[in-house]
Length: 294
Ligand code: ADP
Image 1 (cartoon, rainbow, N blue to C red):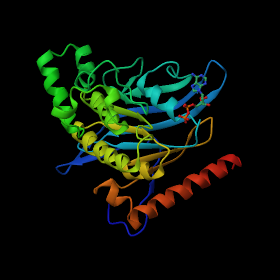
Image 2 (image 1 turned 135 degrees about the horizontal axis):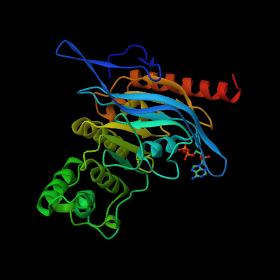
Image 3 (image 1 turned 120 degrees about the vertical axis):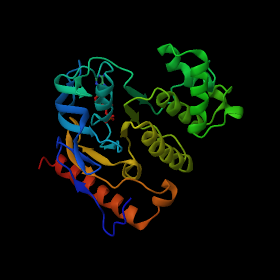
């Protein structure tokens, strides 16, 4: 985070085009995910989201983490699952959802999903769980074993101690590390995370936030993170989308300074807390005016 004496929150226009400067030259950027007036009405007749419009660009050397905040039931998971191409959220009822410039038609290897409830196979070891997607891809056994072991270490587990353990032998934090490794080993371009750290104790949660920031930078992935924690969104996020009550739409988009110190340290600092309080005031204000219909 910058040495902000006052909260550095910049409202950003949804859908604003971006350019990046590399070696003094301005480059055109690719759009990673783009929503154009997207709405979803389920078969029940319930409209979960309406008119959701945004774009997130691929800025070379600086992939964004987008934090998605909003009240329960406002359609945050619906947005993630539309990006993933998962039914019954996909297809959208109205509007267009594009990933890497193409309309989403189905799930794809370019998008990886990390859920809150640790989605490992109970009958597979840590190593076999992490290697699962590679196996589906037809990666040769020795190569996938090497990659799985590499990722066991990258997410902070220990090959000797943990590779042969089954999910029931792991703590919640360790299981979520396996889930992260299972997704990242496939090098997705977009990582979709739905309250991934919601069930973890505060210390483990800080560690996972740090890991997420470091590893998403390493694999150069754009991350969409749904969270109920404003602290978490402000810490990991480069950008925040604040959603309205259902039917959810983006009430405010903001740029947030990127983290540059450990979560445990930074989240106690007055400058950081100033930003959190500003975002909290903004979210509460938006929710109140949204409820009042103004
Ligand atoms: P959030 O993630 O913000 O809590 P969701 O995207 O999960 O919200 O859901 C938004 C609304 O859509 C909720 O009221 C939910 O009950 C409803 N909803 C979600 N999935 C379905 C479905 N398959 N069929 C009908 N309604 C659904």
